[in-house]
Length: 186
Image (cartoon, rainbow, N blue to C red; front, top):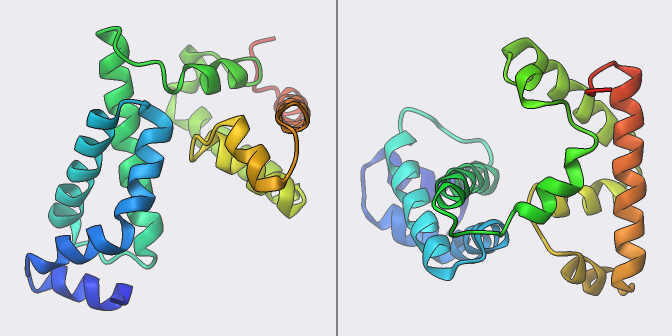
């Protein structure tokens, strides 16, 4: 079913919207949740929560890109679940990704202020726009969708070490950009 038809079902408050959403985007949402959480039960619950959130937000919202809309909801729910699990010492799914990015992002004190968050987002978006398509895709797949280095390497037909080095160079480039903009802790 086309996205417009699914969205129409949400606006009509037709429960088939959830089934159609699951049929079309369930695997996509599951992959995002599993990449970030690594616990199948938590990932499945996160996906179910995504459907509920979509039901509650459409209407009044009318997403222009349903896939992106659902992906963002899933990712935000997975991050919230990750934080809750981490507080309970249950989950290690995002730990590696966060450690990789820790050296190039500002500390939590400065990042919590709204202006600095917006500025950081603007700078990162501009930096991503400046990258060649392959590098941008690699960075987003790793740090937005949470794909493993091994998975990225298989997709590129490369060795994991090669992909890990490319990601390292991209993080260094991001760090340099942020330092020039004076948005790191140093």
